[in-house]
Each structure stands twice: as structure tokens, then as C-alpha cells.
Length: 179
Image (cartoon, rainbow, N blue to C red; front, side, top):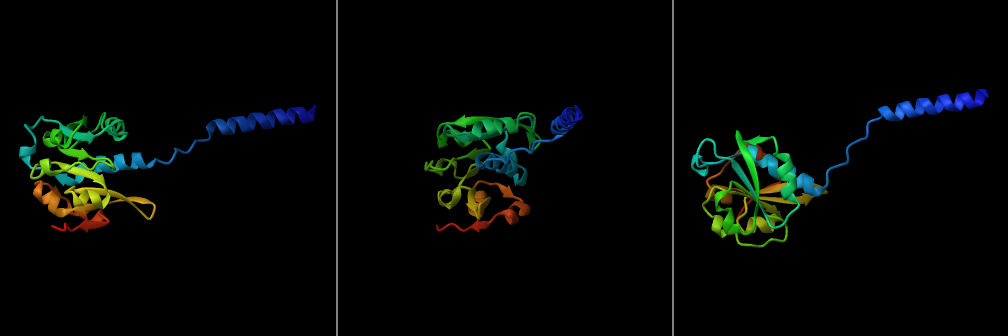
């Protein structure tokens, strides 16, 4: 009988301890990391005043293609502002549709020309150096199993975007265009 009571007491103690144990959150997957990078970049870029219709105009982020990034950014900006503005996240079907947004995420595998955005104040973020070769401003890449980014200073300059020195320092490389 004593043994039975001891087992019951031990079970209750273990049950009580396990109910107070915290479950460690799962590590974010690569797409979630990409979304947090994309969301963070907007805080380190200055857009020209003419990029916004007026003081109350929203900050618009476009995601091209049917991309898992869209719901991640929507959730991330549900109750958050960027540059002191409400944020709208939109699906964009083609690059020419992106001429009236402030930031465009282009997923890996999309090779559409970024030429329609030349000279427009649109921060373009995509995958890797090949994206920068096409005129993208920020290219995300895996480096030593970590998500990092490269920065194309000429493309940012053409877009009229001012990139903070801090973001430039965080970049793995400042990309030099071949042309």
C-alpha cells in the first residue's frame, strides 16, 4: 500500500512539473527568416517624399507570384507600421504592376526583367547574386548555413533610395555591377 501511494504521489509531482514546463518554440524555417529580413529592410531605407501620394498614404509591399511569403508578411504587419505608415501587402502578378509600390519581393526562380522599375523608388528584394545582376537592390542568400544578404548600391541609387550605413555594414557584400 505504501508503494502504491508513493507511485501516485510521484505521478502527481511529475504531472505537476510537466504542466509548468515550457515548450521551446520551433526554430523558424527559411521562408520565415526571409520574411523577417524583408520586413526589417524597410526600417533601414529612406524613400524620397514623392514615393508617397500624401502623409497618410500606406507603405505598400508587393509579393510577385503565388508565394508563401505573402501570408507571412501579412501576418507580420497586421498591427505594425513601417516608416510610420500603415502597411498593405499585395500580390503582384507581373513586374509592371509593381510601379506603384514601395518594396517588392521576388522569389527564387522568377527571372522577369526588373527594367520597368528602373528609376522608380521601389526596393527590390530577391534571391542571390543573379537577382542583383538583373538590377535588384538586395539579394538574399545562404552563406555557411545562415541567411545573409548582398546589397547593390548602384541599383539603390538609381531608385532614389537612401540605404543606411548600418544596413550596408550588415551586408555580406556590396555588389558591384558589371555594367
